[in-house]
Image 1 (tube, rainbow, N blue to C red):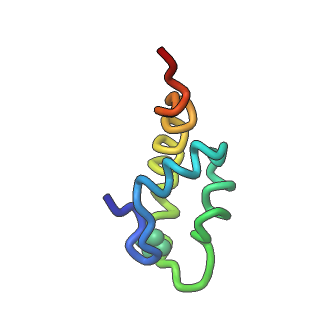
Image 2 (tube, rainbow, N blue to C red):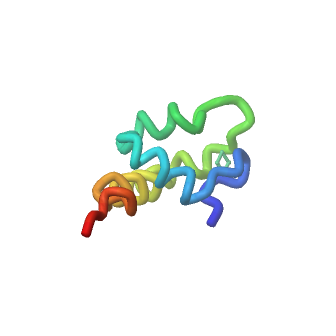
Length: 68
Ligand code: FES
């Protein structure tokens, strides 16, 4: 699912950022260049959606950490 059409950012991009510890609105905006030239600003207004996705990815255990 695309979260930002201008830059082609998908939910999996945001999940990856979350797993790397990028979960704060300012960090996410900087990581994806949401305030750079060429941005329409629409997704910047929806930054809380980015935060939710990144935060849930940050908390979710990675499949590699599951041990039996
Ligand atoms: S939709 Fe993300 S900058 Fe336009």
